[in-house]
Image 1: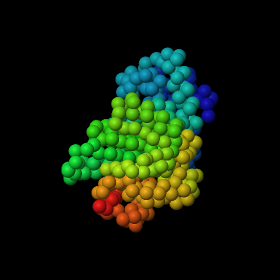
Image 2 (image 1 turned 135 degrees about the vertical axis):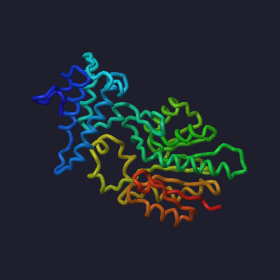
Image 3 (image 1 turned 30 degrees about the vertical axis):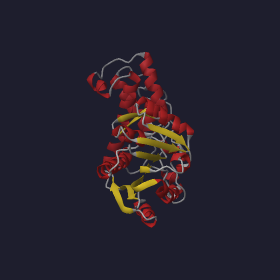
Length: 318
């Protein structure tokens, strides 16, 4: 749908003030949204807030300003160039291009990470994986007699959000991120440069194939593809049409990568070190069982803010 073809309303391209531009953009997004029957008033309100929030982020980006500036001066007149930039962004958004790609970044663990269609967009839920990893490193540091820098491996690193967050939070750590996608690693390396994470490096390879066989790590983290193949039709167009499928789908049961990771990880874990993986909705039981069967001890489930199992972790036996 073109934002210049909304009959009977002020289009985004025609809007002259901040307030007019936001109203026009929200209307364009509303018209482009898939029709859903019998929405509750609460859901309708939730969707309206999402459209408004998207429009505000994109207008602030087009104006090279902050969201708060929009509220401070709603009557501000847009220049022709600003109006055109905003109209172009909304045109792309109504085609379901994710806002993070349009902005070129997504905040994760308090830092801005560059993102584009080469990488999966980091989700807030994945911050739970970082928190579990940081807690494990802190505990291991208290209990270990060595002063050596902790070594961390991040599998399926994508944009490098997890690896770089660990590297920044534990500056003395040595972090290796691996991914099967060289284009994704290009993004990860750029994020490490932009965020001055010189202790995070990246290597190309399928899971542990990128790692020297003799390597031992104090912590292994992974957020692998875990969406079941039969869930494909349920995904939003934002995800299905734009995010890299290689980072999304984990086989018929969604467990393909977990089986490999849990089976192979002990050979790369130092004695007493932790493996922690992010899991999808309703996968906690199956993945925890894989850990137990492989001989991990202290197998633990960590929930996200929605009280859903988000991370399964376990300790390699001595």
